[in-house]
Image (tube, rainbow, N blue to C red; front, side, top):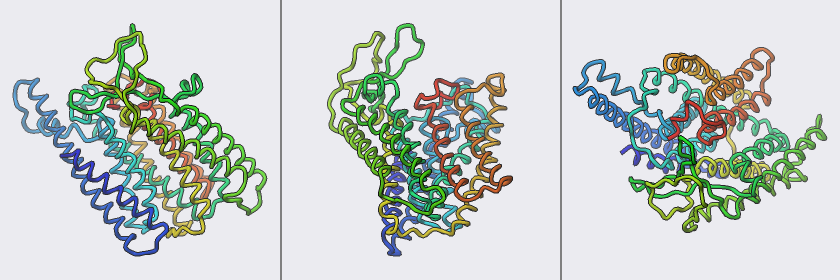
Length: 478
């Protein structure tokens, strides 16, 4: 039941997102009504899915606990066991819960401050998160691993997800502020290009791109439940299976060329910033920097198109010879699919979308019908949303340290997730410090809010992409 409700809410959000995008170029009142109404319906269905998931998880925990004890639970023991598996304990659940919180916080903000234009960003983020969740190959409810069977999970994780949702929404407000104050396109372009280049390289796989000009995916087969699942193999002497990655023909050269073009565009934009310093001019869609960014976007689009051609129309994949043992419980033929590495594919598509939106907005900036609040109000909203999220982040980190002390015997161990949570804390601490003590308002704060989005996503997704190495938090990746 929860899966069906998540799928229905996904398509409802997709309709709402399309409505918000269409309202940018249309002044008809009907588009201003349908989007928020669809968001409300989607939130109701997703809330129902989360509650249903929580109930299913509670039943699984009760069955496992009563089976191990040999007698039924009663009273407070029954209650703590039933509610002790909230719907955010693994990767699938955390994605669905975070997407709900992002859309919910935006919806509440829209009701308070009335800026439906921001729905493009907030609902788009929620849509991406929920869509990624629906690609998880094994979303079945299972009893918690022993390390997570604690009431601390209700405190620690809950606070972090509220904080992350606030920061993601603040990123959307930061983008709106930069647009409202007519930030020169070369400033935004430099920021975008400088961020896009490393994202393309990391998502494409630095070792394989530079090693043999290849982008790699993990082939998938059918598991016992009839769902697509990535193929694993066991290396000689290893104690843990790892995914088997295979080159996807024709994709790597375009990704590497796109990353190089993004770096060139960033360099040209920064040179343009220095040349126009102190002036009010904006070249917009003119100049070499815009051309380089357009070329980078086109190269990335070709690479992504070839990739999706393999995903949709590709046949059986020829597996390479490996020294270890291939996984035996999957049914072939093996082929490429999103389930093989959805995070990397998602980052490439997200980069392509952001680049395309920037190019379109830069070229047609005067034609968009954006109904945004005054710049000062937007700046104040960014500050308020971050001041709501920052205490939740602080409490979440502290509660996690206390839980780590009880579970692992130490408060802090520089686990990758712990380290990046601390980096996230410092980013927003810098925002609050510079605003309160140095009076940094306007563009500097908006840029920090937007940059914080990248840090939050890396903190949340980095462990699952394997970019930060193995850590104690990796048990939640399934």
